[in-house]
Image 1 (tube, rainbow, N blue to C red):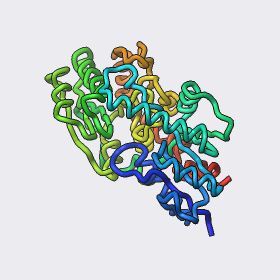
Image 2: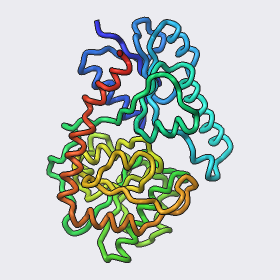
Image 3: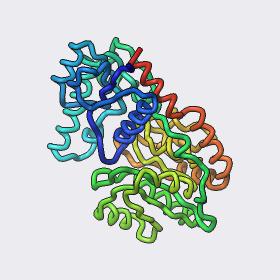
Image 4: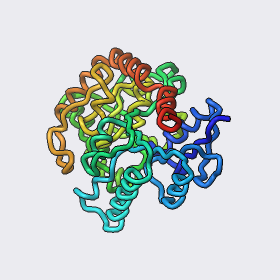
Length: 340
């Protein structure tokens, strides 16, 4: 009988961790490897902690039963340290950092970092650890996310796609930048540009976007099922990756798998994920760790280059995804850590 793997915490809703857990469980099921979400289950041979869990006592008891504990780490909460944040939210962010760091230091038998950037970040803030570690980028179902379909980018204008889970009043940087970029392309280069925004966006954030650019063409798509993402990717000219210091954003990998080129600033793991030919990763032009204002001009020039050579970039994006982001390879890599 194959060893049972426990996945904690049990996740639902939107976001990259939710998507990862669903894909990983799917990969284990395809291999006839049993899974559960119960740390106390007697058949558990390994536990994959996705970030952190509040059930420290149960995790410690599993470790005492010689259940192998592997922790998957992305980035840290950091914006609360450099921007005005309500005290309760700031304390929660810092407590989550400390909880995850405690598991990393004292309970985990091995660590899987989502990217080289993620590993560097954790080592810088909380120090290096002596247990085995590895870097495994997220993977994608290349059959589900693919360039083949009836959808095509518009012929009469350019479409920039922005895909986020939730955009509230405190998470507007990416949207603001995308709006300014589209406006710059329109005003300075006389291009017809549609900004398509996928995700949960509050009315206050929408009003803020229109205040920045009252005449900007913004298509608010809202929250869509994950099954509709490939069609949206195929129907755009470029994805703007809006996260600052992202560890390994799923939207980037999914887009490349669908043949959609990536446009991003050089923060976080973007440079290690997106090579030349699959998109453009440009200098931020300021101190992004302090949330200083970025430079739009280099981003706009790179965007125009992708517009003008879209077919070649689309081919490069898909080829890179096929080579580096296969779901099977990701699952096998995690299994090497979980069941060595």
